[in-house]
Each structure stands twice: as structure tokens, then as C-alpha cells.
Image (cartoon, rainbow, N blue to C red; front, side, top):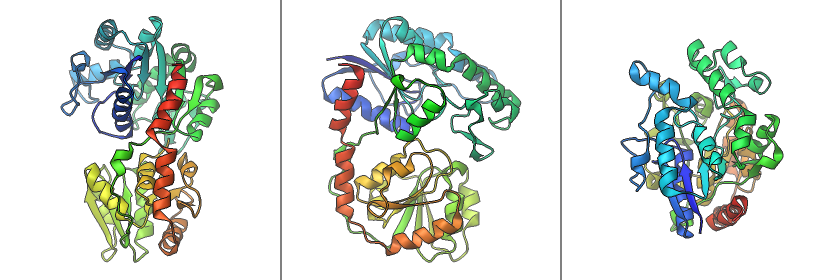
Length: 393
């Protein structure tokens, strides 16, 4: 069995990239591989035998810590020393990277590659194509950096700041396509949409493999397919997620909406809710609570206004037999078959979304069939078989 080192900037269930990383470690270990982890220190970091190799957490702010954070994207001595020590002690055959930019940096890919270790990289955002990582400029879709990276500075895309945008520009110049391709055996794109964008950005087709994420079937046992009379949104309350558009549509309708999650727009969104609108903000919930809320919902809404790489919430909803009403943007349409496991609507279009919510309430779906189909398609065992072939094992 192979010795595999898995890297991600955080190693606790913080977001989709972290959950995938944790699940990947478990999947590889379940098949007998020796697995080590490399991440930043953090109060919530899961305990592993490898935590002593984790570099300290950096935060972007003011003071000395800010200077460390500014330098970290370019490959700092502490990360290099810690990662080299881990490579010396663990001696991996494979390094599998995830979300590493900025806080860890691609320097770890070069360190592994220089030792003849195979490097694989699962992509979780568009950082290799867009210095901002999300292909947005002032809240709207933008691909100008595919042609000229300096646009990130021109439009001050990061925090509306010339300094922050200049740092992102310099980071992207240093870790350019040619340099990253040289030290990476294969990039793993979680969707056909991401695969297409990587090709548009000039990455070689021979360097990219498309693999949808997988699910642990044990998380979806004992699901009740009896639905209650509400629909829901689960995710971060931020502008790119399209929750403002959802609130505007929901304000016009009599159907109950449950919103699960937290984020910078929480108070602003709550203020937009009409006095008599049946909209409840439930805040952050644990996985078990989310599973119950989603499994009992008539459907979930994914109103994204950015290029979703995949959409973990869509996968989770399908696996508990809940249909999806998804914006026609990014990878979302790949996961929704019209009138089989959900419907689509035009991203940012309040009228279209409002009408489709009504259609979804009046539609009939085979909830159990949705769950069974999704769990089979996204099986961990199927994923493992494909991943091992990508690894060349």
C-alpha cells in the first residue's frame, strides 16, 4: 500500500474543501494506506500524529502577524522547514494537495516534486486562474485575468485595495501556470465546468482529470423520505451565494423558507425580509441538524451567483432524497436533471426564481429514487477506484 500525504490549509470541518480532505484521509486509510496530514495550526484542528509538523496559523490583519500573512503565499521558511521535516520522517510516495494557496502556498508542491514524489492536486476554487479565486469583480462574473493578470490590480479586486490586489497579482505571477504544471502530476477537477475553465486558462488537458466528489453512505442511513411543507437554503450568507436574490423572491410567496447558515450578510438579509413573510433564519447547525432539516424539506434552493465548483450542499441534498432548485451557473446544472431531481432557474433572476419555487411546490418527485441514484453515482468505493488509477497505483 502507498504512503500518502494529504495537505489542506485547514484540517477541521470548516468548509467544503476541509470536509473533502477529512473524508479523503478516512477513505484512504480504510483501504490500508498509511496517511499523513499537513495543515496550519488552529484551535479547532483535528488531532493527528502529524500536528507537530503544522506551521502556525496566519491571519490577514494589522501588525506583525499581518506581515507574516503577506509573506506566506510566496513560500516562507517556516512552511518549508516544517514540510521538509514531514517529508523526511513520513517518506510519502504521493502528496495529494487541496486548498493550499496563500496560507501554505504551492511551495510544498515544488518541495515534494523535487524529491521525485508524485503530486496530485484537487481543485476547490479558481485560484489557479483568478487571483481573487472566485472569478468575480464587484459581485459580477469576470474572466479578464485569464488574458491579463494585471487586471486584478487595475480593478482592485481584493478588498477594493490596491495593496491587497497587488499582493494577489504577485502571488499569481510567481505561481504561474507553467510553474504549477511542472510540479504537479495531475490536477483533479471536481466538475466538467471546472475542467473546462482550467483548459480555457491554458492548462494542458493531459494534466487534468475530472472526478466528482464522493459521499460516505454511512452519513445517510435511516433517512425518512416524508417531506414537510417548507423549502430551505443551506450555506454561507454572502453575496456570491445569491441569498439576496432568494430573499427577494421568497418575499413574494406564501411558502415557508428555512435559511441555515451564517455569514457577513446575516443582518442585512434579515432586514430585507417582509414583516409577514414566512422566512426563518436558523443560524449555523451541526451536520446531523442540517441532515434532518434538508431531508424533511420539499426541496433546497442553490441560488449561486458565482461559478460554483461543484456544490457540496447539492450532493448532500440528493443523498437524502431532496430535490434541488439550482441556478444555471457554474457546475450546478451538471448535478440537476430537470424534473427528475430538481429544476434550474436563471441566476440573479428574481422573477424566474419566484416562478420556479412555485413550480417545485407543485411538482412530484420520487425522493427515494433521488437518494439511491445519488448515493450510487457518488459512491466512495467508485471514487477510490478512479482515484487509484489517477495515482497510477
